[in-house]
Image (cartoon, rainbow, N blue to C red; front, side):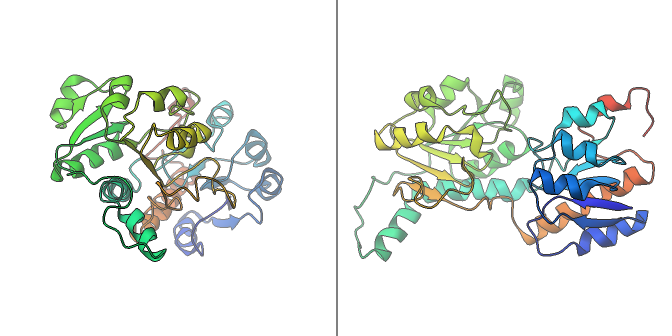
Length: 324
């Protein structure tokens, strides 16, 4: 059996090949990750493994023998889950993937903003050796870190932030006061989070309800001395609104691991902004996390091909009247 691999961010498929062999299957990497290329590659395959490429209804239907669509990662915005459910195809993800890495990266960006690390680095390399250059430095302890989205990653960020003496506010539509107290954070409304945070770190999924959640109104509510940290999804932030807030002095700075668009085209104003720190969608990455991700995604495929139930099924409604 062939398993279509739409796209990868690593050099080979040896981990996947070794594990899929247990179910007498082998990975097939698509030549092109656009829809026409994936439609061609999907024909005759028994499953799909995808990293970032868009798995559209056309791709799913072209994979006429599809028994699973497995996501390398947490988010599902690149997979048409509804189309899979209509065809009773299980969709899986790795919900606790790279939690530690993303939490570390988010806090690293908070510290880089707080201590002007990237700003000083760029200034010195440009020939300016000046302690007072840029915005004033403040003690980290006692400042407010707002966490938007309090799932696994948000909770890990809060745990790390406490070590530095940051006061942590958390916002989530499902978070209760009891849960926030147990986690050692203060529960905040969305508007309250925006108004009180010195650092606002985003850990929300991208959906129609969260797209451009950080818009003109949101930036108007934030402190002009605040920093925005985004290690989640670029689409959470309205990029023109962010640039306007930075240039108008309504936001002090931003540290972005993800952007919209991604990657930024040459000459984009975010890329040249002195109060913006950029990293290349790297928060998830470590050798250990990527190896684990590849193995766990392949194991989900093997479970389904052998007639078992996947560990992390995201569309359980397909089980109604169906034994997987």
